[in-house]
Image (cartoon, rainbow, N blue to C red):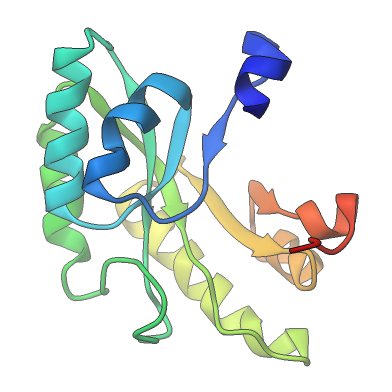
Length: 161
């Protein structure tokens, strides 16, 4: 894969949904995981870090602010419990929050979602990172405080499936 091709001179971030059966591979391959969305997956990652003798794994909590059933992420209601759990972990290191807002042609409509994630960060992890914004809405995300962007399409063009 790309990781073997480019090697360790790159910091690898997992940005997609993480299933428990792929967690061991993720712990071995990735430097940072942006998609921790449940105590269940956090528990699995913590255990695997111990098994693999990995001292620290930086993670972002993925928050579902839109309520869309098709999007992963912890609900705002369950967020404090997940944060408390992560703070109790010896190996997982909470470094920030991630969200995927609904797609709107008018990118201004995503601003409230980015603003909400920033307020969550300010409340729970004042110096934490914000992973939000994609190729079509990243300028708004930056204005709202994004520190990490997903802009592959803007850089590489549309995917050819």
